[in-house]
Image 1 (cartoon, rainbow, N blue to C red):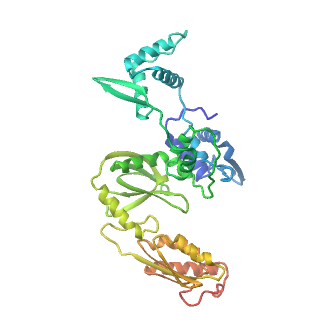
Image 2: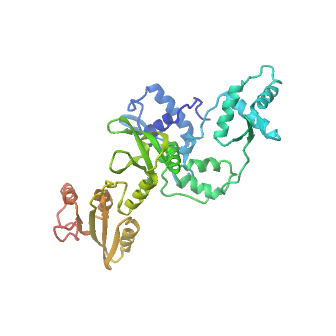
Image 3: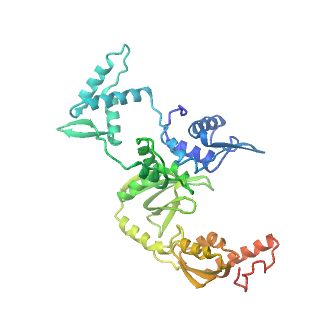
Amino acid sequence: MAYSEVIKNFNRVRDYMREIFVYGFKSRDEYTQMSGRTYDDERRRLESWLGDYMRFRQTPEGKNVFISINSRVSRHNPLYKAWKAKSFTDGDITLHFILMDILKSADDAMPISEITDQIDQYLSVFEEPRMFDESTVRKKLKEYVSEGILNAEKRGKVLYYRRAEDIDFYDADTLDFFSEIAPCGVVGSFLLDKKEKHKEIFAFKHHYITGTVDSEILCLLFMAMQEKRMVTMESINRHKDQLSEKHVIPLQIMISAQNGRQYLMVYTPGYDRITSFRLDHIVSVKLDGQSPQFDELREMLTGMMPHMWGVNTRNISGQRLEHVEFTVHYEKDEKHIHDRLEREKRCGTVERIDRHTSRFRADVFDASELIPWIRSFICRITEIHFSNAELETQFKSDIEEMYRLYGLKDDTCSDRRDENDL
């Protein structure tokens, strides 16, 4: 049974889950943003959802808690439990079931006066009935209309309410896949709960689950983009531990295929470029008015993508592209090297020079974004060039420093043939 304290703000749960388990693995003494007692309370709440996935590690500083998930065993994201642990008061539960029963039995839609009368009749059989005034019932009905549980129609000046019709939705296999792969997959997980148990056919080798806690932020951003609206966005600089507020036009969500990290591409009025924000650094989002620039800016971002390796862009007024080019050599039993270049080239091109040599080229806004990927080919690279001379010097300097660190000679990699060889 989930920890029973009422959850009034999911942002707190989101923050604690991320800091205690997902990113920080912070112990009681290390987490200074709340008291030790609050830490214990929140940790117990999270453990009640994630107990089957909890692991502990004893360190010289004390016991650290973390999440461990075996994707061969766990087919579904366990962090979805945080969204399903909504707590209710006794009054919420009582009113919910009475309303559903009354409206299910009704032949037609009912006004609030009639609903209130029937609630009183419903409760009159009890010795000490709980009473609900019209204002409380009205608020609950309005809440259920906004969530799609009820439909409301106006007849004259009076609102009439009826239960929303049940609808057919996707089959279980589709929901299995959607819930684990798509942004806001928690929606699929909620729908999946309404299906009967079934044989699951999907397992995920690379299962990026940590974005789950950002689903509410992501949903609001999707709504803003669908309606072409601006948003007021509050974000945190984790290095400086500072909050800042910005009015931006959200344009697109981009998700890293390498690590699952989610980014928001935005245009900030008054600045001459489209920039990105990590979704897990966004604290809150508030929808504002519509933006007449949305279509133009979205088209501009689309035009930039053939030269974006990651999420870095250029000034809207224009920016010179940076050229990257390197050649790799591989043995006759290493055909997978060329295949990997083709598979991972993104906005670049790959040319096969001969049976054992391939060349990669790309023109991008920020060549430094390619460095981690290029490093994975070290000792196969025979030649490399960057149009950004400073970046090329730094890259080669880092390689030489690595050789010195490991006490290697210049001829350790047989493919290093001249001053450009690595």
